[in-house]
Length: 306
Image (cartoon, rainbow, N blue to C red; front, top):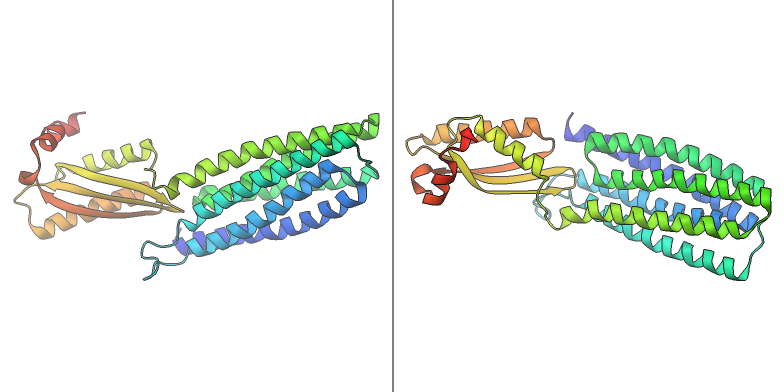
């Protein structure tokens, strides 16, 4: 699948998330003020952050899909990581506000009414969020989009938090204990803080140019071993930028290898890596074996035997 097709899929999924969150925010905010439920209000606040996150994800995936230019010579792939980081901050901030409001309601009391409407909206929210998040997870896995994955995590947490709020409202209706509304809201807030932490870990790493996972680096090593013309390599650097894996390295070749043959060797190695890993942008440099240090020669003397 081409990068253009992947970009179109990401853009469509992000647009769906924005539309769904607009509908959800409208329903939750209206019901929260109508019923006076702080747990529903906490869900409304979370949905507002989800809407902002969905908007960021929509912009990020469109920006990340644009080609490199003079201003962005390496492309805009990291916009997705920026989006994921901002989403994590939004979730964290909203969660703290939810917990604070719930504590205030628990201490000073608040009336909750018309619970049937709130229960109906929470059921609709959990069902819709499950379907939309499932779609986003699938597209994120297919396109390796950090922004969409963060958005999908947000909505998947909404599924569980909406079900928790729904259960809490049902208990309030059955028992009359209004304090349960605040207890459920605090639980939702704590769960959202955990999600914010998980999302930030996945998004910030590529912004700091952390290397690709060890298994992917080992795969690159195995692919290079397949060509007997490659005597070794060094200066391997890897990083992630949005949907792209960026790799550069120096290959060791025999001194008597012609320039054209060395170029063909390097292109063959790049093609094998691109076939094994998606979204690879790779640069290779060829060096003669005789110019390598004794340490590098010793390290690769039995390279293919290990």
